[in-house]
Length: 209
Image 1 (cartoon, rainbow, N blue to C red):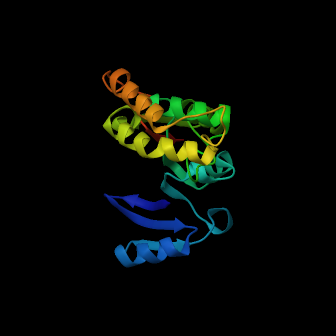
Image 2 (spheres, rainbow, N blue to C red):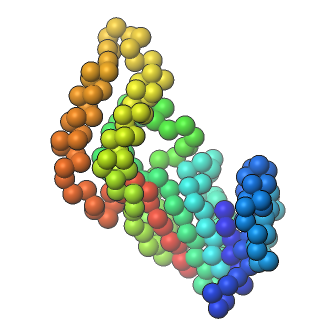
Image 3 (cartoon, rainbow, N blue to C red):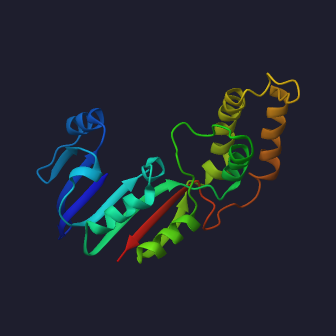
């Protein structure tokens, strides 16, 4: 995570925080600047002070209690501070198909996500935090284009394998059926314009006081 304080004239003090000692070690090796410092810590334990911008890229969905962490971010904001968050978004063709597998069959559709957010979730967070929210979604090809096709070609066989599908005679999904699904997506999903505000694979959210 990136926490920026004393932001003025295009500069500021940047504090990079990560729970992983290995991640901090790599970051120190690759990024050096007089206004940049690194902290290997749990943000719930030892972050102090006020910050103008707090950036959390692809982390909120991994926290045990995301709203608790958002409140922590808010409490560390300066008067006109902002929280910038990105998180996978599930209100798109990719999300709809995978969430059906997850909710109905407890399918392991991702390796590490604990939560599956949509823009509606973030709007609810903003109301509870009493903060303003601006948002958009990006990565539309991942959600409904060629990247989706490439991802599903790899992912769906692995998801079904991890579900144990194929071992049960009552549920026989072979490669031919998977190919049939991929071809259906190519014809009936990719061919349409899916660039709605909410339909990208990644949500980009800006909270402000």
